[in-house]
Amino acid sequence: MTEKNSQPEWAELYVQHLAEWDERLSAALAAARLDSVIVFSGAQKTRFRDDLTYAYAVEPYFKAWLPLADHPGSALKLIPGERPILIDLREQGFWHEPPQNAAGYWVEHFDIRQAASAAAVMKELGSVSSGVAVIGEPARHTASFSSVNDQTLLDHLDYFRAYKTPYEIRCIERANAIAAVGHVAAQRAFRDGASEFHLHQTYCTASEQTEAELPYPNIVALNEHASILHYQNLQREAPSKARSFLLDAGAQVNGYASDITRTLAQGEVRFQSLIDSMEIMQQSLCDQALNGTDFIELNDTTHRLLAGVLKEHGLIRCSDEEAYTNGITRTFLPHGLGHLLGLQVHDIGGHLVTSEGDQRRPPNDHPMLRLTRVLEPGFVITIEPGIYFIPSLLDKLKQLPLGRSVNWDKIAALVPYGGLRIEDDVLVTDAAARNLSRPALRSAAEL
Image 1 (spheres, rainbow, N blue to C red):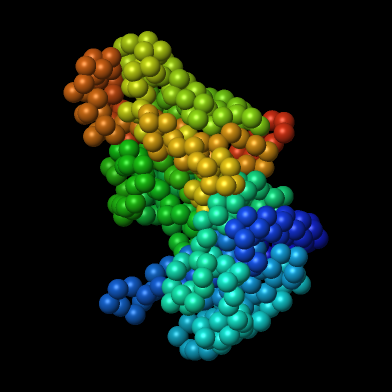
Image 2: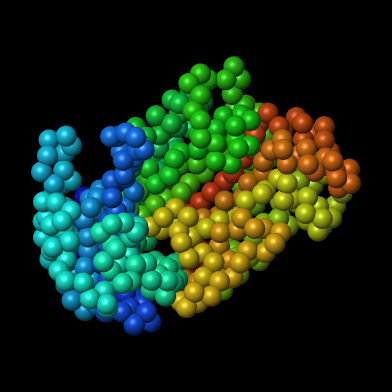
């Protein structure tokens, strides 16, 4: 959703934001030996052999400059040091309501022109020279440009995108506040015996978001469904016995996302005890998300701590050191500790170590790790350890000699709960890590 607040705070933050992004663009264009860039917002796509459209998703670098996530077919013309030009597509028709007219604290910083057709958009953009770059999905209207998604240009922008401006941090904070209201409402509905479908609807209603406005499809998992990391189905009927509830759901403000996960137990002491241990572990990891911390090493610390949780709850027969060294923890936590967060939920640039495009790939033992950089002030990241009882992975471990180190009776008793994940959004600063999710959840619960 677009933040309607027009208070001076937002206007001031936005001016600083534009200035920072203008500097980034200037350096990126210089590195790519280009003069200017046109960013297309993206098209509304039609389904194959149909006249209905898919949900629209805006180009991230379009919404980096202005808080418009629902203006398909529009374009931005950006020349460093000059007033940005927005070509706003306003097709005449009667099938759909056009996007709302541009308004708010940001409009005074743009030269806004309206165009009645796709052809008119291109006409407003003017003549094409070799120094003009395009960012956006390749399409027929980009064919006349000599530079489309120049890798040097994108590498530079993607790398510096990790450093959030105060405006971007404020957007993510607001997105956390909105998501928190939905989480609290869904947790109450779970206690009342709601189905996955109704839990999802409760979240959307409380957070005042349509499904198209969500930054990613909600993961709403009861019982064993929590063992499917991106569980996508919504059962209409509640299970006869609700043991556990995992909700991974966020919100968007001005195109910037939040990403929060909580897991609850329903009167299940054994599983609640496991949640409590993971809660302590997750908060310890959040506290270690400091300036200068190597995220690969923090991911490694996660598995050392997880081995201790497995030992504490009697899920392994070997020592926690042996469980870590032999990779047993990877069966219970197959995904990475977290990722960058911002214009995209899994924000791009997590493997870049220089603005020239040099990458640091994830270690072989943890190929799913989306963030391999050393943390710096301004990064907003997720910290989301979990422990899952995934039948296919458990079966594989059971067949190995290492399987003898696992207490399979206790594991079998936990399989019906699926698993758990606890996730917060954390801002890295010069001092202590700043958790953006916890205060929002506390405030929502108090309300």
